[in-house]
Length: 326
Image (cartoon, rainbow, N blue to C red; front, side, top):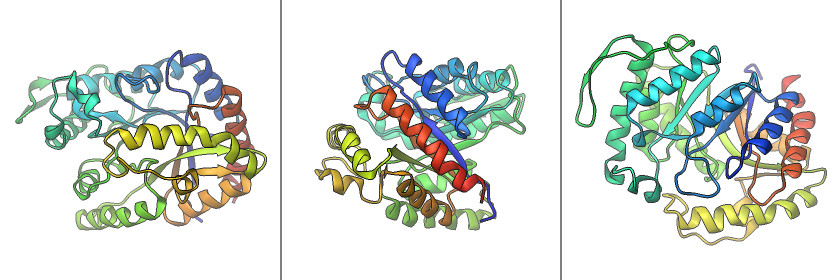
């Protein structure tokens, strides 16, 4: 295997998040992880609404890369988002990865006065503008949703030509958007790996048509590693059922809304749960299929911070070295 494999981690991201997120992030950094990531949802007691501000706080306590997985782009004015990204990238000397998507939860959109029906079109204009604003010092644009005249982002981002932009999504149009307007497609954790492989064909086909290469092919997965697989399954089952059966299934998720499954059915080909050997097998499968940036959502909701720390440490000590030293 010739490519280097990178690992990211999502620590605790709800409530009074910082003490646990700080501890989990430091343990991840000490054990070989490359980046830390935060998601975005609004009015939800188990997500943060402002991932960039959370990353700004953690940026002063870690040297890892800092990513959003994801920011809901249609809820931002592109100029404001570009300013926030550029400012954080300047402060951290080029450590920002901007992950964005169109969003899907109606609750996220209602109180912002943004139509869920318009999100794809807003997303297209937003991506074009964020790219231009981060690349160039003077931008004018006359679109349906956004109009700019001689707009300049200051301070300028440290990364050149701009910080990387990764785009999430599941529909063919979203994958083609990622190929056309971003640096990577960023599939999330809710869909089985078999389905991701089928979707990847659409993305790769679009890249070929555009004559573009892909330096990174990231993937996000939910993870819990323990000394034995039996222990990992027993301790994480309640967390996964809460996240998938209660939250995702009732949230209007475009791929799994309304589904009812057993824990074993949810877990199959989706979660990385087990002992270190199970985790190695899963990551090896991702790598062999071209995925070279694995972002792991480690802070499952029903776990204690000590359990999350133990899982991160075990993954870092037993799984990451297997790939870093190949």
